[in-house]
Each structure stands twice: as C-alpha cells, then as structure tokens.
Length: 298
Image (cartoon, rainbow, N blue to C red):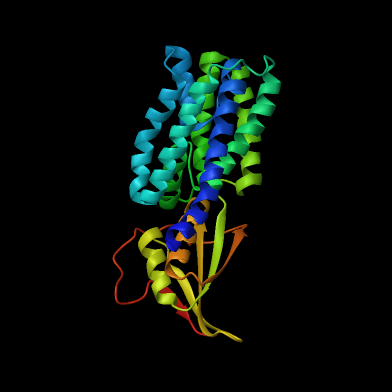
C-alpha cells in the first residue's frame, strides 16, 4: 500500500502537467489557429490541411494519424511512454472536439499567431515535461537523430518546412508565413518550459550499486554510462555514474534510478554542446558478463 501511494505521488504531478498541457494546446489550435487557417507543425498541421480540404473532423484525424507513430515509438521508447502518449493524444483530440464548438478568439491573423503560438508552446511544453507527446513526428525525429548526425529539432523543422510549403500552395503564402511565425513562437515557449526539443541532459548518479544501475539504464534506454569510484565522507564507498540522454528519455531515467536505488543521489544538467557521438543511442541488448559501463578509478 505504501509503495502504491509513493508511486501515485510520483505519477500524479506528471499526469497533471500532461492534462493541463493537452487542454491548453487544444484550446490554442481550435480557438486561435484553425479559424484563421494558421497551421501547427507536424501531424497536427497535416491534420488541419486534410480537415480543411475534406471537412473531416480535425479531432479524429489528429488521433488516427498519430497512431502509427505511437506504435513506432513502442519499440524505441517503451510501454510507459506509449501509455502516456496515448493518454495525451487522446485527451488532446477530445478537447479539440469540444473547443471546435467555441467561437474563434480573434479574426486578426497576427493576434491569433501571437497568442495562439504562446499558448500552444506552453501546452506542448507541459506535455513534454510530463513525459507525454502530442505529435508523432517527434518520435520519428528522435529515431532519425539516433541514426544520423541530425538533431531532433532539425528533423522536426525539416518536416514542418514541407508542411508550411504545402500550406502556402493551398491557402496562400501569407498563411504559410503566419504558420511559420507561430511555429517559432511556440518553439521558443517550449524552450522556456522544457529546455527545447533536442536539448541533451547530463545525468550524474551517486549510488551504492553502480553496476546494477548501469545495467538497468542500458537495458531500458540503450545508453552506456561512464562509471567512477568515489567515496562520501560519511557514507563511504560509492559508485558515480555519468550518462547523457535526450529530453524524451529523461522521465524514463528518473524512473530507472528511483526503482533501482531509492537512496541514490542524482543531478541533472543541461548540455550546451556535444562533440562526438555519445548521445547516439545503442540498441538495448541482454547484459553480458562485462558491465556496459566504462570504469574509471580515482
């Protein structure tokens, strides 16, 4: 019972962030952007184009088009991410359906662009911080970034340029420019809320059993750790693990540490630049006799 209560305490804040974020993002899209034909990026942007041309419900299109990307992310990001992603996308689609009945906030495109972009960025940032996802292109971008030298942000931006180019051909280039402006505004707000789409994080873990922790990280994230021997003045001998992960993987990293060693001391820092391929993910594999960590003494 105590473990269940403790698990709920850890899950509820994330669930609340995902819920508030999905509602805010849906409100921004349905009340500010869609009525003046300003597009969001990614799957939502594609859904807006199809809905405008065919009159199919935007809420249904958004969820249906995201399903293949969720299934694609299952293998790479795990069942927990899939569950959170399904919840956030389903809630986003349901709230779109509700907010479609609301009157538009403004008929002036520049106001819709600014206020819709800010609110959308705030909502998406909360969802990402809570471990959820509203757009399947992020999942594809993360997978592509692991196999190439492109960052997640660069891949997403590439997708969006194609979408906005299509919007310009169909609805006029002024709508494409408004959409691009909205994208930059929302991305900046996401950056403030969640430190950016491709932001890497360095994680340092001080634990009693470094090998077990390193094995768990490798099995669930496919990340190798650098392991060093350390000693606390009072606590005695410790293992110090250093690992670099992406933003999407950070919530899973927190769970791994909490489940493996509740007494572990963890610090998480932003990484401004990475030289080399350390951020590239290796496919998870069964642990071998040798620890999947680089061991340094001193």
